[in-house]
Picture (tube, rainbow, N blue to C red):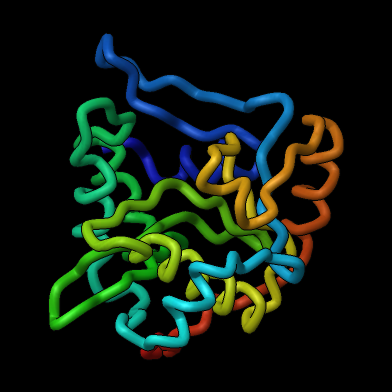
Length: 196
């Protein structure tokens, strides 16, 4: 297992782990760093249509390990069994959370990450049905707003994240924001399951 206390220490300093092809654990602090706005999160038109149809049920923390394993189930992955075990222990301690999209009783999409202070570190997402990961991300944003979070770290920006308003911060600016967020208290709401 990747030690949970080590993961927390790393995140508090702007560093995160990834399993490498050679079996080692790499530690990264990209410059610039990708962040996603919480209050100014952009909801694309297609996602707005999907949300209006209310074809998904959004749950939180009901299938954390399953979300991690689904995120890892791809040709190239940085999530190995040590990372799964470490983050599942963080979840058991109340630091790591998943937001899941369910349809007809099946898990079809989700995302997960780590909460420290008023910062949330988004780790990965997956989908098995069109728009399921977007719905889960939208659900995550709702929770972060409700809980008083002010920083959503996404590490690097992909085209998928760019459509929601993700942007880069230089490392020093990111670390400044991180330090401020870690001094604040936020609460990841215990109950916030909705249909959307």
